[in-house]
Image (cartoon, rainbow, N blue to C red; front, side):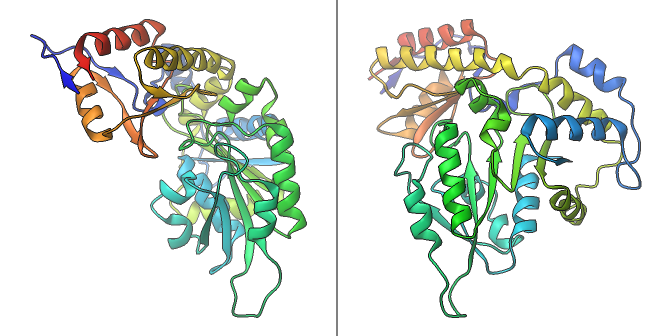
Length: 347
């Protein structure tokens, strides 16, 4: 692969992540006007409003705001697991590969990955049942939790449809396991499938969801479950340093983000357009289900360098080049990126 040099640097087209989305003027104005209080001593009213609305949208009795999705997942796993418990998760799950081992280090869980034998990002119920095993001698691992991910980031934003989700949850519960759902991009799955988010949380014991991926909020996630779960989760959040005081300034942005979930369909359309354009240029790209495009290339590092020289920013993921579409990358930017590849990269 060679790259033609240009006389002046091209303006960057940033496909690295949907976490790059920035609050617009409307969101900033809502943040500036937010009613706030001390959310540790008492309750910040705007955080409370967000938690109640998020719980309703996710179909859960209660919800807890957290500064990040990683903290939301860690709070959930720490609440569900006892030290030394084994937990199951689809291979490549964010809780396994992208949270610095906190599930094992801080939550004390023993992770065990499950193969995607039902499709990208999804194990079969039979695999869950087989991995859960049964009662053994006291010195064997005790498996207590299944952690799912929808959409599955490393599988290219792959979605788990409601019927498969329900079958996986049923298999876990039949085996005596609790179920946590990493729904960082659950909103994308909901939009792609045309179903309410609560349809994709049916039966789970907890779920996390993020507002800073593709929706423009600068900070914030929630973790939701039963009232009893959230009471325990609130204590764990405080242990982890997540006791933000006047956090309503941030929660206000998350409320605006919730109003924008339907707009994620635009990102899915841009992802499909980029994938089609790359395939037409000979790239090995599957049709994306949501807003993430994974491209198989011979040399990931060299390809990323070549793209960077053209002002196109992307990241590696699962041995491929990952492009993520979001509200701050337009359809014209997709066309521009394809034109730059036409002019600057020759296989």
